[in-house]
Length: 125
Image (cartoon, rainbow, N blue to C red; front, top):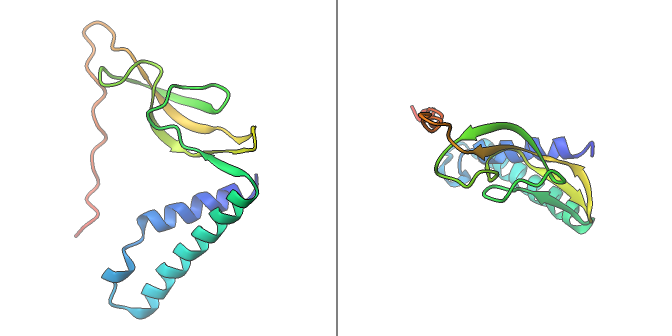
């Protein structure tokens, strides 16, 4: 379980890193490629040891694999459906190592409007 936070951090790093081809600095390009290769190797090792991800976006909420962190009032998804994944979970064979932390759709109350989309952050300047 302790290594799962390392996997999370490597995934965050690669998701937020620029594409290596777009970088002009060769040192920075090598750094991004190295972190990406390290992430791929770590996930290959996890897979070899039968540790699999629980990434339930769009699936029905399952209390055996997911931990509901909040509800999202919406008419765009069936109630009880996972509409946001805050943290991916992991299983070893059929044993839960860490539940996926998720947001779950709930029906709108009378007169209630759907939750507003989170504002997009401009990452390009």
